[in-house]
Length: 271
Image (cartoon, rainbow, N blue to C red):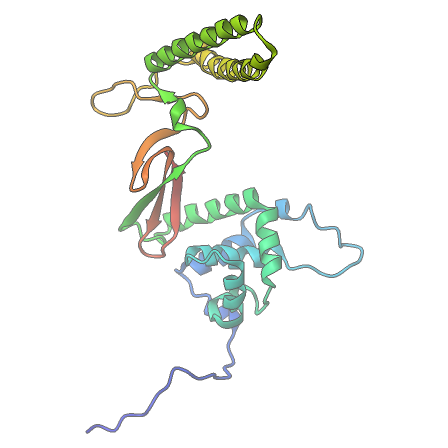
């Protein structure tokens, strides 16, 4: 039987490394590091800092951007996990210059500059795409159906909503007529009269909502081969009725496209 040297991955080793040498050319991390260090304007991140004349020094936004965007490229979106990676992963250590920002600092940075971070990541991905660092051989696309803050009962074609408005107006007239008849009756009818008044008021609001929508709306046409009118929604007209495993919802289909090579989300939209 051959006599091989035994090995064990579950051990800790003290290794002397040069951090810059860990960031190898022709990799996503190299492009990220080089672009942020030399080409991308980071002045948008400087406005909220006021420690130039005293106070504790802060982490450079360039360092935080590198570890956050590299984490995103690996599918890591937890601030605690990013902190752990900075403590244990050699590429994260190299990008952060061996700094280990606390997860609360990472979370605060992300929440303070969402638009600026998105802009930087977009610039990095555009360059990486041109350099062939995103793979582009296969994109995995998946989606999930999400409810919107709109009632599906308020959906319908313009003709259906018009009929609904007429029906509500008829109900309002009935309530008002019965209310008028009760006005001349005994005091014990007062409670019922109040209920009718409340019902009429609710119906009136619903009618006005539908009527105002119909005054400005135009038919919403589908995008299929046979173009036909699809249902509108008076609360959120960009949403749609969709069938899910748990029934019908009024909402959106959230779709994400992920690059195969680096598992980077390159596009995400709600339809």
